Amino acid sequence: MYIFRNAYEALKDCCFIWWDEMKQMVKDEGVLIFFILVPLAYPLLYSWIYNNEVVREVPVVVVDDSHSSLSRQFIRQCDASPDVKVIAHAADMDEAKSLMSRQVVRGIYHIPSDFDVKVNRMEQATIGVYCDMSLMLAYKAVFQTAQTVSMQMGAQIQTALGGHYTSREEQIAAQPLAFEEVPIFNPTGGYGSFILPAVLILIIQQTLVLGIGLSAGTARERNRYRNLIPISRHYNGMFRIVGGKAMAYFMLYAVLTAYLTLLVPRMFSFTAIGRWQDLTLFLLPYLLDCIFFGMVVSCMIRYRENVMLLIVFVSVPLLFLSGVSWPQSSIPGFWQGVSWLFPSTFGVRGYVRINEMGGTLSDVLPEYYALWIQGLVYFILACLVYRYQIWLARRDARERLASIREHSDRQD
Image 1 (spheres, rainbow, N blue to C red):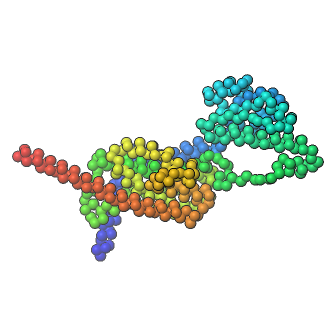
Image 2 (cartoon, rainbow, N blue to C red; image 1 turned 90 degrees about the vertical axis):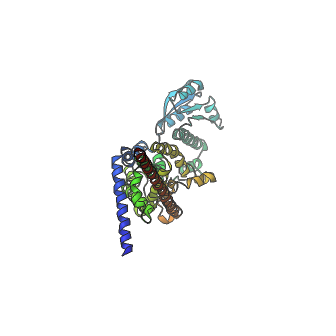
Image 3 (cartoon, rainbow, N blue to C red; image 1 turned 45 degrees about the vertical axis):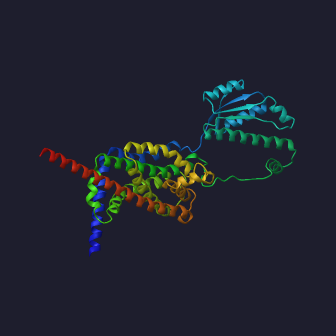
């Protein structure tokens, strides 16, 4: 009977904390923005920006010192490609560099004066390609277009000079070793399918930390933690406080996580071949991990404005440390250890392997176990830091009570 009564009291305390936290979230405009508006709007904005997947019609300028039929053929084929658009012909390299420095063009094709002479002599000719490296997608389009056109023209010249009798002989001479390029896990080769899954998972963590941090900052400013003192006197009171708050955040973000990880990729036709059952089982510890991590961080930062500065500062490094934009094997050991402190590291790796690569839960067991271990550690830390918050609230209450008594004694 005592066990059931204690369980009932614990559930009632958790529900009280849950209801109080839900009311505070609704009343705080900043928390609503980061809990509702940002998770709903940011994925749509990012997906819409990157929905084209690849860069098309990158502007380039041509410096044609050859003025031959072969050079004009090269220019026409480059301009006919979907990735490059020849918008200008410069008289010399100085004029071309001027256009590039003013960001009018993203690349320069320089055809030397001896281009056709060397080709006709059956010597190797060269074409200079100058790319703007500030944007990797533009560099890829400019360089690969020139490379593809050069290979095609080389095959045509080799076929014409080969003296073959059949089309099959010409085909073998032009391409002795046939190969087929099949891009796996990213069929379009697009930037959106490459980077968006990691961004979606990172949004869950960052918005949760921001919202919980703002809510905790407001609680400290209003000294709302003193309302939790009666509950904290119960046995395992800290577990009830952390559990009640986690219930409020989990109920809201369970829906938002499904929206971010299941709906958004399909809305914009990004790669999504993972089973929803595996995704659900994997994202459960990740969401709990982010909640407890956010609760720990919120108690370590005193002012609510500092939370926004911290999250803005670490967002880009966390994306790199996840191993998506930079190979995990190339990250130094120290920074790999730092990355293990954040739920997004294991969350991004596991989600990408399930949703984009078609893996199952058994394929991401190291990340899955790491998330459960992280969640347990951050749950214990959250209980400890909230216990410390209650101790501070008790100390402040005793100091105020002593001050009131001292003031009353002076008046008497």
